[in-house]
Length: 313
Image (cartoon, rainbow, N blue to C red; front, side, top):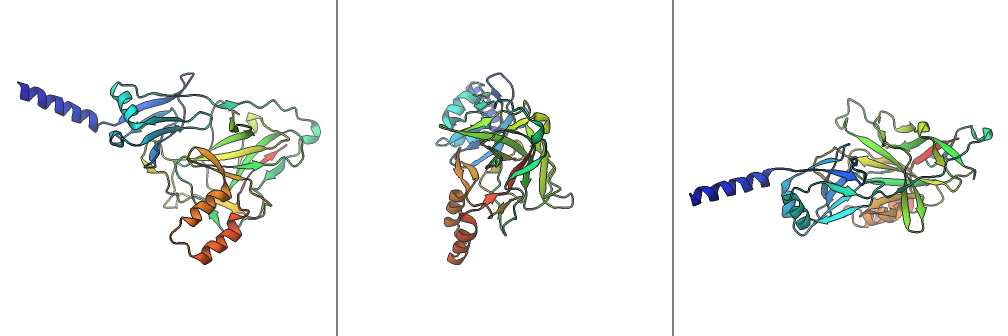
């Protein structure tokens, strides 16, 4: 009888361990948070939750007892949970995660008649450099400061981004799950802060063209005279374990025609200016010769920017 009981207990434990961990990431209002990046900090692998905030993690992550799970999403404060604590929560059936909102609203802009002619701002329309930014991985985020060269408040009509290659049905890399999530930031004394511009996510899913102009006019997003940070998040396949440091087949087109750096990348849950990150990647590349590195430094590091911009009126 004791042996049978022990066998059943071990079988039950093994069955539980073999299962996936499933839960929801929710806001303080109880709504599902879409496309949350959930990953192990040290091992740098993870998943992206689905549009409802539902996530599925393999139970094997519970063996990474010295690691930390990161739950990160645009417009919310990042939550960090050590794997042992997460294991305790899982054992107690507490798999739902609540993220605190961290976003602001911009004041409504009043448009005068003379402002109604659309105009391009940012780096989208500049000539491309003979290079591209290939470090797009699941949940990677980039943004560019778009200067308002007219100094008057406007409304954003389209957000513009230039990819380094287009996606076609014939391409072996064609992926219906590809999407870019659009976001906007402003810079404050305490750092960057997300601007809430819509109740739903603004997603780009059509990559049949290299030059993408995505219409956002229905949201009436202000383009303040102080300028605005426009960003894109590369949303990976949902609920599929992926290496976060490995770039995908898509890349961003860059330009070296700007006089200074306007670009930023999101690394280790903080924003860093793009040339600094490019410099770090270059010096840690074991295959880069000194000649290649010098050329890279001259043509890319000094003034390379992502080709991101807006059209506003």
